[in-house]
Image 1 (cartoon, one colour):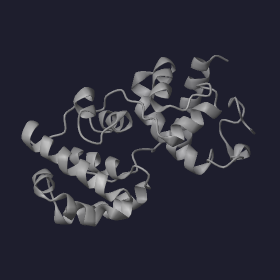
Image 2 (cartoon, helix red, strand yellow):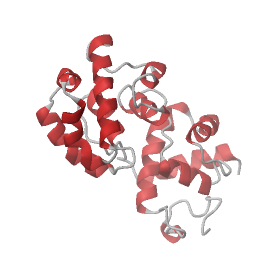
Image 3 (cartoon, one colour):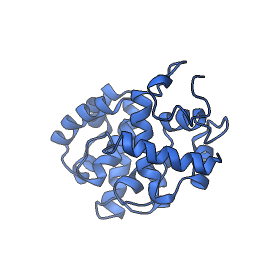
Length: 211
């Protein structure tokens, strides 16, 4: 079985296993996902979802966050860790949205990358979830799983993993595939030395099953 064939089979099986998989960060507007994905660095999505409730109560829109002081934002987002740097990035990002993009999140990958605190993973998440564009989000679950499955070979750098996956993942499948990898990584193919291969729907085609 080639990598391409294995990839397509894995995509189909994960569709059956996790038909409703999606972004686990709560948001109802694009700018809120931009804020949440910055807060999610080295923090769980569950904690971010709790913290942003207070953040949006105090600062309900782009302009409010842009006009807030870094200290005010930091006081609320501190439970997510790295509070100072995250607050600084969020404040600077909201100012750019307000002053350059009429308060809206740009639907262009390079423009997203130019925003403070936005890397390729965040930009891909927004492109896929907000704008429905082809996207591959190489978070820790994705990187761990695609290496175990043999879709990439010993590559740990996110940008390099993304580049390799673009070669074998159909563009229209990328975003949902990565969400399903997160679900599978949490439920079955965990970060433990011995994941639950006996419960895995991919056991017969995973290159490293049982390792």
